Image 1: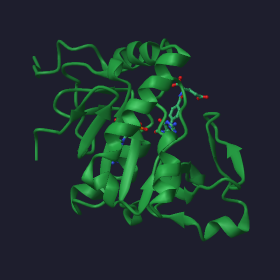
Image 2 (image 1 turned 180 degrees about the vertical axis):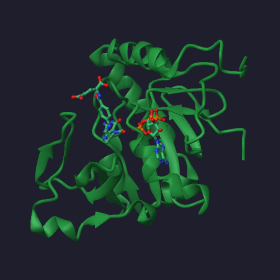
Image 3 (image 1 turned 135 degrees about the horizontal axis):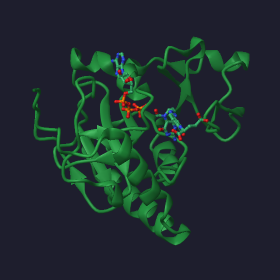
Length: 208
Ligand SMILES: Nc1nc2c(c(=O)[nH]1)N(C=O)[C@@H](CNc1ccc(C(=O)N[C@@H](CCC(=O)O)C(=O)O)cc1)CN2
Ligand SMILES: Nc1ncnc2c1ncn2[C@@H]1O[C@H](COP(=O)(O)OP(=O)(O)OP(=O)(O)O)[C@@H](O)[C@H]1O
């Protein structure tokens, strides 16, 4: 009989369902407040202050909203990028420069993303390794800094190279604090994050 430390925990699928419901259940006022607190917390972190090329995301499915940071980054002369699903469906992400007049389209998950068909935007596309900082969405996080995502493995695949080439880019998961669980069942392919920041805490992973 096989036995492992995660066998008595709810499955990743069950956890995803519960935690996604939980974040979607927050009121508009709670979301606004959480986004404000998150932004204040992030602005104090040295790796955030230092970053020149930053990827964030447009919130979907109750995710905590990183958009209050966009103007702050721009004022500091940093460039902001958004994830774009790579065509040919290899389940990896590209990052495309994002500003007020960036042409957008919705991807197959109905999330808006910069439209890369627009010729001028090809040049504004960065591979993942060229970023300084990636603020990534998550569904669940735990005290050791493990991350549970939407289940597509997009971020895991895109940043798999970082196992070999640490510490660049810096990876920070963002969450509503209600997405915290004491212990997540980790998977072999999970990429280690440098920190997870919520409206109420900063988790620095304990493993190296
Ligand atoms: N805001 C945001 N952008 C992101 C991600 C994310 O998690 N959040 N991603 C992080 O990887 C990538 C997209 N990955 C996603 C994976 C699954 C679903 C999702 O909603 N799945 C639905 C089924 C939707 C459908 O098939 O039409 C579901 O599971 O219920 C969304 C995004 C890239 N962009
Ligand atoms: N580096 C990788 N190479 C190949 N397959 C991978 C890699 N990372 C993850 N996968 C595959 O992707 C699938 C989804 O992974 P997982 O459940 O960890 O996604 P997630 O981290 O929750 O999602 P996301 O990163 O999109 O937010 C798994 O079936 C896994 O086999």
